[in-house]
Image (cartoon, rainbow, N blue to C red; front, side, top):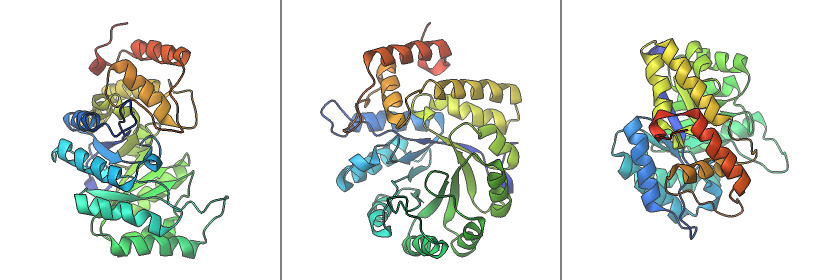
Length: 308
């Protein structure tokens, strides 16, 4: 259990929030603090996502600064990758890829196209979209296969892996374990496979994947690393204990439609910088904040030092 398919090491990645200050500006010290905590814990970072990273609220200059600060603060201890947002056209994503290249991020994720009004691309259009981006990329790529915006066909994944060795990861977010199992078998160690969210973390590793992505690591990165370390040393009791705590943390969030509201409320309670939101998102009300505070204390996660 110490490695996934192909002998590749296990890992956890955090889909980072973007820290803002009370004025709504990028909180540079908050970015540095968060990335140092991730580096200390040994969990990788994905930057600038739509949720929880509020990536659509960032202009290119702010995104570039976010990338620079994160890379510098991580100081080579962990992989730092761009996650980006769902583009409407390839030309919308290219500037983010170019920023990631110019800053020197380790990789850039390629989301599927959001064609708007529930429009769907044909298989040929989808393939051309990925090939156009991959042909021009000068850094490693991660592919997103997401139930909300388009699971990649296994045929396409195989073809892209055959032609583009700089694809280093596939981030798979789907409740379909059959699809995940077939994807792992197809990839066969040629790239890392991480599942989106902690829900399938143990199952995915058992099937041969390399780990998971999560938002909970913004709050408890050492806990997320604890799951990986326990599975690496085949300590199932410890893995189950850490896993239960991560799922407990995840299920505090009962406010659908944007994980950043819950995460930033929890950051405020825990005294972490950068907990402000940008419009159109608004903070949870005081009653909800009190509920989150009670639930966080009840979890008793060691790295917080909270006493119930």
